[in-house]
Image (cartoon, rainbow, N blue to C red; front, side, top):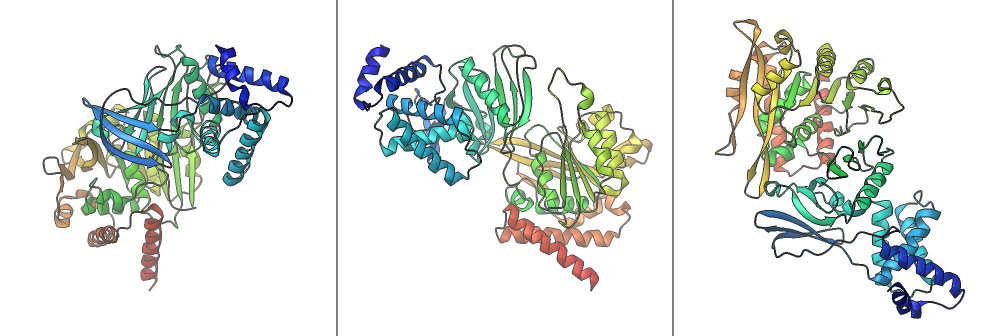
Length: 532
């Protein structure tokens, strides 16, 4: 069969140095059809009938969102390579991947270089190919070498939050921010065997400067675009074989005015939280996975004075603060059988360092154990303020979790309060809401008792927030009444912040950089007013 296939292509070959080229083409064809050499995994069209809910483009690639019997679908319509184009692709890939180093070029130089090599390579093996074919080959070369291979389109799609693969032969699934209630959408991306999947995982780890092997068959790492990937390799710890999950983060964080407009919280709640964080009080943002904890944390931090100094400490870099006066610290873990755990750098180690760097605000991505919690409280209560996230479904669950971390009731009173986030299905979409904002107070029955005072709550049946009037918030807030600064000053400040947020919404100012510019002017104006 291979000889017949080869003979069909001979009309495309130039006779010069035919023998050498013949051997190369034979080898290329053999490697393509035996699956030895790298070739692009192409997505097959769906074999089922489904209802198209929406279609849109990511670059030049068409995406179809569909539904069939309650199953959400995400289909990618990529260009298809013909057998001749696969030969050209394979030959060019061989040249580029193993011979040339072109990553230092800018994007335009790189594209022109690859186009030239495609044309030269096809000419050298005697393959006549059209401009449309060159465009398709260039797409797959870019996808495989310089981008994210088969998940490149979901990685570029701003609507996709997570990408997951449960193993070879299983469709990759994605989580779409606009169709959350359909769950994980099934794609037409399928690894045809374990070798393809494990090769993909190794390549992604390599892109991130990490390694993964059978000795230590798991790893989590940060991809070049800032996404977090967790992967397992082989069947050592995963019965289905290799697997991975990619958690994407927005290139630009969502802003507080956008979250208010989107219904995650009210303008009164946003102003209150902005005021509390600005005054360097300690708050926890709690909720289940993917409920918007980090999104809200980012939005609040984006409303602070950019002239102050910020230090963030995270396992995975998710926080982005719009000022150059920001030091982002990340932990370090060594996935090596030859390195001792003493070379790991933990959250609590970085908190000690951060205290010596004179931050105005100390932000910890997430606390997970008693040691981290104690270090965070000790650091934040020295006047640096503190914001962190934690997993808990409601205020009482948060209190139980904090106490299980050996936090004394007397220490709990040092916290200002907590914000609870969660998500619900609304039609085919998923909505995120701040369901409760509570203050943590000592009980009148003694220091060992803690009371949770709910200031705000979400009314699920009406999809609205209570209370709607500032006066009721001030009346119910023991923390504001007990605070060391003037109560009237706090009232005026929260009112001013509420009006500022509503004005940005009225003017449709939601972009990260635009909001940052207005915040800079906001704090500059406050400084000038104080000086005058």
